[in-house]
Length: 406
Image (tube, rainbow, N blue to C red; front, side, top):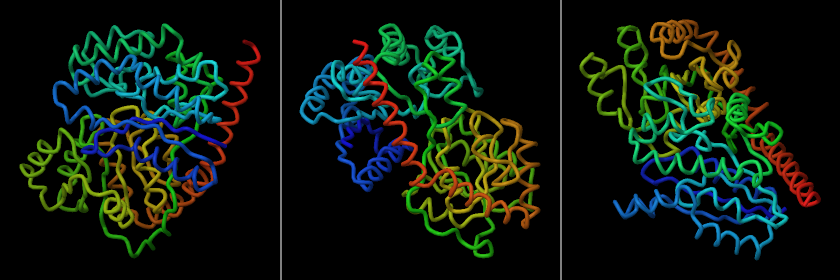
């Protein structure tokens, strides 16, 4: 099968799970013998140009005719069976989906976020999940609250993109199959307007993981990996560790973001320097090595994740996960088998659950075995590849039916 993968890489200064998934899927498809073509842009192109680049990104967001025309040329020359779009924001724009008009190429899009209907990309406002725009099928709430980067001006291009492509039926007429990363996300996106029959669920995967370390070889540590932003709930960990006191195990926080300085200062003020270690943004290999050696990953998310790639990575290493009972996380983290859940935003419940797990190392070691089994059953490259091929075939079949009707 000939597959054209389209992706706008986010800035290199901020590692992205979407970038990682795009690269992993491209490598997997090539490994399985498919002819893979990549059509990409990089957000670094505009970041390096300052205010001019910001304007270029804003103008490109709703509709970039130049990207669409260039992709049309590639499609006509290469004639791929499938165009698989990962991220179109900001330089590719949804206009690229219209480039397949009149061609036999089937179109597939992975929903790495909620940007088709949510200007912020993550349905969250004032520290809590917010689905006003999805439920009302309107961008008025986003414009009212300036949801993208806290600015109405910055939100306007996003709102225009959402309104334009809802109005011209881009998603229903020019995408043959959507890939949601969880059943929860599928439900939300269907509620927002995507046709249910075109949404397929395929979680992310972890390629070629090593064997999990024996339990006795693990370090007595807990880890958080992710962006240090309000949506990830990292500040709750600092509060919980303060309440835990002297018996708390070391907590490694890996990642960077707008709250790093504030969190570091708070931890120091509370005398937690020896208990909470802020390691910053580490190279992927080093972050994975540290993850493989710990006994628990904590995800205190306050937002609706699309999937939570780091949970899949933890399972690959046989590391149990304690996570918020919110969004898709309850489906990803089976309680009692591979981890435990706590009430989102509740420091006391977070502490109760995590401290309870830590006090029962026998149970935690059993969950480590369950975590690895969870990975082997759901998140290996083989399982993912089979699902992806089924989705491609469904998209091709739907495109053929569209052509026969026209």
